[in-house]
Image 1 (cartoon, rainbow, N blue to C red):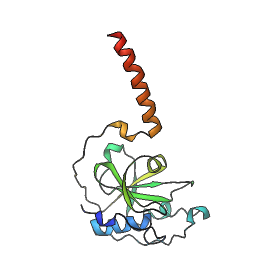
Image 2: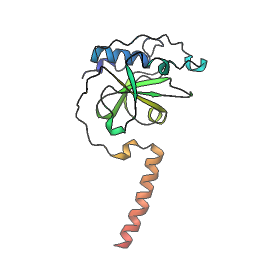
Image 3: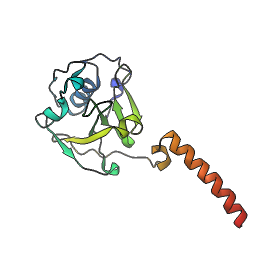
Image 4: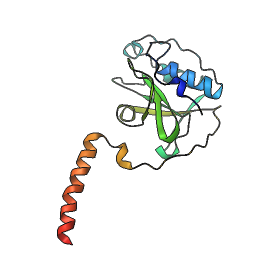
Length: 167
């Protein structure tokens, strides 16, 4: 599944934004045309819950899943500084997340930090074939915030000293 041509795009509201990236991904990889929903730049400040109002008509269904059940092409919606979804992206291999944050370049990130902590729902399109992809084994520590990683390192260091004294 090739999507590298979608990486590094400049942000342009209404075309090359997170939803535009999702539309291009689905068109290019699955030959699925998602409608170009009109989205004013401040839609979430005006109470326009665009994804919630339109996901069914676009062929998506909301799914409840464990992170190990995420499939290539599944969508996650985030509420970033909002009470409802105002950002979206799509999962690619190894549970990584293709998305386009406001003002940045489109990119693939691990599903953690701002996108994971603000996730409000997962969605799967009815016409996306089940894609089996190889996954790599990951250390659970990779999914922790830097502060939690530091705390874990400190706890491990404190406990290793205790373990050495017990031996």
